[in-house]
Length: 487
Image (cartoon, rainbow, N blue to C red; front, side, top):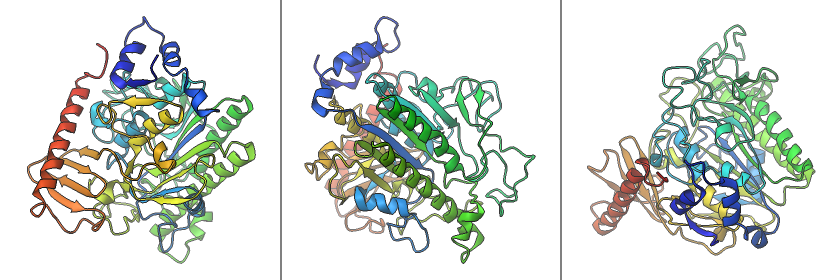
C-alpha cells in the first residue's frame, strides 16, 4: 500500500467511527516500509512552556533572565528565529501540536473552549501503532478530565461531559495531567495573592485543579515545591521505563510556567534578589523550569538515547498582557502585541530543536515554522508523506530543513482567533482585526515590529494573500462541518 496518503483517505481507510476495521493493523500496513527508510525509530519529546514571550530567554538577549539550558540547546541545535504558536492562546496551540491542523478545523477556538474530537488523529495515536509508548505530563487544556468532580475551569460543571476528552482517550498510555493552570510553586495550593506572595500560601485553601493519571484517579503525592520539578518527576521515570523495555517513546511535557499564578521558591527568587518582587517570581519560575530541562537532557545522555531523540521546545503563545493583574513580566523584545493578539508578539515564540543524530551543526533558521509542523515532521522522520498540505493538513515537514534542503516555507501560515485573521509567508504578513473588513500588510524581514503598514503601497501582494486566506478559511469551515471525517 502506498505510504503517501491524504489525511481524508487515511481516515476512511482506517475506519474511524466504525468498528469494522482495526486502526492499528491498517495503519501498520500503510506504513510498513517506513522503518527501512529511517533505521531505528527516533524518540520524540515535545516540551512547551505557557505564556513565555519571544524575549524571555537568555540566548535571545534578556538582560536579567538566566536560562542556561535553553541557551545550551540554542548553541547546539536549531534555533528558530521565526517560530510561531498556531494561536495567541494556549488551548488551540496545543491542539495544533498533536494534529498538525489548525484548531479552527475541529472547534477549539480559544482557551477553555471545545475539546479534542474523537475523530481527530493525534500524534500519540499514530505513534502507538508503530510500537511507541506515549506519555503526557503537565497541562492538557484540550478538554475536561472528569465529569463528576469539580476540577479546574470546566471539570464536573455543566458541559463537562460534552467536552470530556482527556489525554488517556487521545492515545496516551501514561498521564500526569491537569485540565488547565496551577500555581508555579506548590501547584495544589492557592497563593495568598493572585500571583503568590513570598511563598505565604494558605495550606488550607486548595487551588481547585487536580493532577490526574487516569479515569477517576487523582494524584495526591509529591505535589509540593516547584511545579516544573513536580512534572519532570513523572516524565523522567516514564522515559527510563521505556528505555529499559527497549521501546521508542513519545513524551509530551507541557509546563505551566510562567502562566499566572506566578510563584517561585526561595532558591530561585534569591537569584534575582536585586530585582523587584514580581521580577523575582517571574524570572525565578522560568529559571526553575530551565533547570528541569537541564535535568531532562542529562538523563537522556545518561540513558544513551540523546543522540536519536528529537527534543523540541517552544512556548504556547506570547507573554501575558501587562495590564493583567499579577506578575506579568514577560517581554516580546520589541515585537508588537502580546498574548491574545495575532501581531508578532502574541504568536512568535521561543523555538528550539535538538536531534544530534541529524543536526550535526548548530544554526539559526529564519524560515517561518509553526507548532502545526510537528505532526508532518514526525511523519516524515518515520518515512511517511502526508499529501493534501495545507488542506486539510496545515503544517509542513521540517525534515528537509534539517537536511539543508529547505530555505523557504512552501505554504504560508494562516491564523484565526476571534475577530483576528492573518496570513504569514516567508516575508510578508497580512493581518485584520475586524475579520476581514480592513487589512494591514507588513514586511517582517525589514519590519519585525510591524510599524510600517504597506497595504496601500502593495495592493497586488495584499490581494493575493487575501485570496489565499479566504481559501484557507473556507477549508476550515468544511473541516469544522466534519467533511474530513468518514460519515
